[in-house]
Length: 331
Ligand code: OGA
Ligand code: NI
Image (cartoon, rainbow, N blue to C red):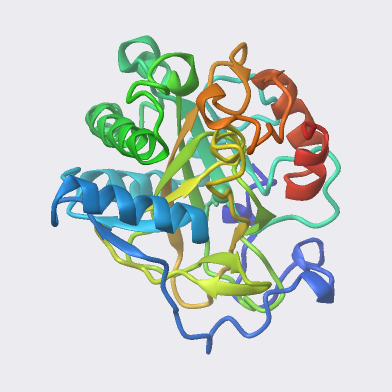
C-alpha cells in the first residue's frame, strides 16, 4: 500500500510531504537528554501512599511510569513488532481510510485535512470483550490473536485498578468508571520506521488523548515527549514499565483537578520504534460531566454535560488541539 510510510521510506532523504514547517519541528532530538516523569511502584509501599503518588503525578504531569504492575508485556511487544515486520502486502490487506472499519491499518495522524504526513503507521481495533472482536483481528502473525487476547484482559484489569485508585484519591465511589465510562478498550499499535532526518519529522504531532486513560508500552526505544512548563520533555524508555496518561475525559470528570497533557512522538535514525497503546474509552452514548460529588459552591462545574460522541466529533474537527477542543465544552 503506497500510503504506508513503511513502504515509502528510504535511507537517503525525507519525502517532502513529511517535512514539518520549521516552527513544529522537533529540533535536535538526538542530543536531548531524557528527563523523566514520576515512576510509581504499584507493588511498593502501602496503598494510601501509592494513591497519593498517582494523584500527585496526575495533577502535575498528567503522566507517570508504572512499574511492578504485574502484567507480562514481552509477548505483546514482540508480536506487535512482528506485525510491522511482515511484508507490506500483508498489512495492506487491512488498510483503510474509513474510521468506521472495526479493524484497520492506517497511517499518519488520521485527520482529513492534514498538510504534512506523520512518520507513523498504525494498526487499531477494539478488544473488549475479547470474545466479541477476536475473530476480526489480524490472522497474521499466527499467534497475534492468542497473544493480544491474553494481554487485553490483563491490561484491562490493570487499567481498572488504576481507575479505582484514582477514584479513591479523588473521593469518588470506587466503581465510578466501571460501567459505561470504561466499556470501550482499543488496541492501537504504532510503528515509526527509522527516519533519515528525525529533525524534520514527527511520528505523532502534539495532541491530547480524547479518552479516559491510556496505558502505553514504549519498549526500549525512547521517542515519547511530554509538553511540560512550555517545554518538550523526553520520556525515558523503561522497557517493562507502562507509561500511563490521562485523557481529556479524566480532566473533565475531575473538574480540572487531574490533567490531560499534550504529548507527541519523535522519530530516530537508528532503529524502528513500535509502541503498544491501550485506550480506555467511554461508550459513545455516555453522558460526560464533572463528577457531581466534586462540584459544589466553592468548586463550580467547569464543563457542561455532553455525549461522548459529541466530544469525539469536536476533537477530530479540531485536530486534537487541547484548548480549542475543550473550549466547546466549558461553561
Ligand atoms: C498515542 C501516543 C505515543 C507513542 O498513540 O496517542 O501518544 O510514543 N503515542 O507512540
Ligand atoms: Ni497520545
